[in-house]
Structure formats: structure tokens, C-alpha cells
Image (cartoon, rainbow, N blue to C red; front, side):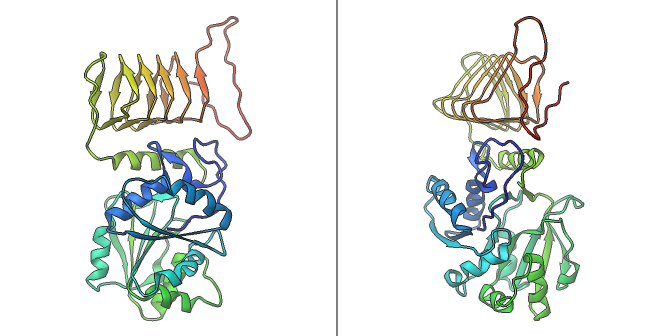
Length: 341
């Protein structure tokens, strides 16, 4: 897994400096990436990135408790280039097959079918490329012709390397690092290896825009398992996949999943609609919220209009002010965005 140093410009709800540590569905994006890799059968990971970033990433991943993993950390020479991360990890990878997965993005398709394709010998390198112009399930776009690699501007999000190919690819680019995975794939193809690309419409990456974060949030909630806690008492109505922490309090509310409500959260007299996460110790009272991220410790109380596609940061307060004279009172930081409807 590769973690870079992009600094999101948006006011976010998690770590504002490292995209992979931003929280969606009440967990860091990096934890969701580990879920995807575990589902593909991976149990040995190398995390590459700049030294200062790895310090915080390591602390975050130490809290991952879904399954035991062997984690290695290596310093990458270029915080913006995943190929540099591949070079840094090459010694640990050796001749084993390898999945390079960016730490700040998610895919709504399982990786296992592509690993099966690799094991069948039909490809040496498989790239999963996000593209806003492609819809539907993953499907092959190019077979053996990497010169047609023209996906989304940020390039492939996942690269699956066959046995021995990581070392070979690093030897090809030892003098001059190509600017990205797509360029590396061209070199591999020119050397006679079989490269396949797949358009992954479900690939989303967080690079600082609130809309990107909400899209990854949607993917993470869609991947929730079907388990839920039914709160049939306290005059609640709950529909769909709803995860409510045992320590959370939900009363007199309508919850329509997929929704996650974190530990110690308090929800009363509220409507919590699809694709919403309520962080730990957040308080929601007399409000309607949908397709939004409410960060830990935030408060939303007695808001008239329904909050939709919104980000409410840690310990922020959104409330109806009943004092006179009646007016809209805002505290908006540099480059923030507020829509009054």
C-alpha cells in the first residue's frame, strides 16, 4: 500500500494532512483499504511513504483490529509517485506477486477475480484505472496494448504484479523513475510482458475535495456487512443496514441505512438518512441528515432544513439560534463553502 503527502485543501473531519487517514463510515480510509486487501487473501503488507507520513500512518494502522496482519514500513523517496513506493518495497516483495494499492482510494469491486486472472497466466500486470467516463462493472479495455492507457488524470489506483515482475519492473526504471504506474506499464509492455487494464468506474480517491470524500464514504457504507443492531424500542424505526454502537443512544428517531452511528453518540428526535455516518460522541437532536459525515464530538441541534451532502467537522456545532434579531450568523474559514437554501 502506498501513502503519499498530498495536503487536502478542504476542511475535513479526520487528519487534514494525510488523505489516507481521513475517516469515512467512522473509520480511516486506510482501514477500509486493509479490509479490501484481506478479502483478496493478502496477509503481508508493505506500507511505503515519506518518513513523516509513516509515523502517523503507523499509529493509525496499529489500531486496526479486524484481523492479524504482518505490516512492514519503508520510506519512499518521492511522496507523490507510487512507483517510488514500489522501488522502496522491492527488496521485501522479492519475487512474490504483489498488489500496489493507493492508501487514499477505494474500489467498489473485489480484487479476487483479478488475482484469479493473474494466476491463470493471462496477464503479467493488471491495472485498475478509475475513469469518470466509464459506467458499469469492471471490464477489459486493453489487451496487451498499454499505449492506450488514457484513464482518469490521477492514473491507475491499483496495480497487480505477477511473480517476479516487481523486481523486473524496478530494474527497468532504476535510472529514471517513470511518473506513475501507467508509464511503468508502458515500459513493461514494451519489454514484451502482457499488460491488461480494466476500467474501474467504482474507483474513488480522496485528494482534498469534499465531493471526493463523500463518494468514498458512500463506497465504504455500501461495503458494510449485513449485520446490524435493531433498536426496536425507544420509539425508533430502523430500515436497511444500520450499525449502531452498543454505547450509542438512539431514541424517537428514524434511521434509514446504510448508516453508522459511533460509540457514545446521542441521536434523538432525528431522521438519519442513507449514506450517513455519525461519529463517536456526536450529538444529533431535532435534525434531519442525509448523505453526510458528522465527525466525532460534533453537535447538530434543531436545524430546520435537512442537511444533505454535508461535512461537519470534529467538535463543530450546527444549531438553530432563536435569539433576536433573527439573522443568519456564519463563521466561514478561508476557501470554505456554505450553501444557504
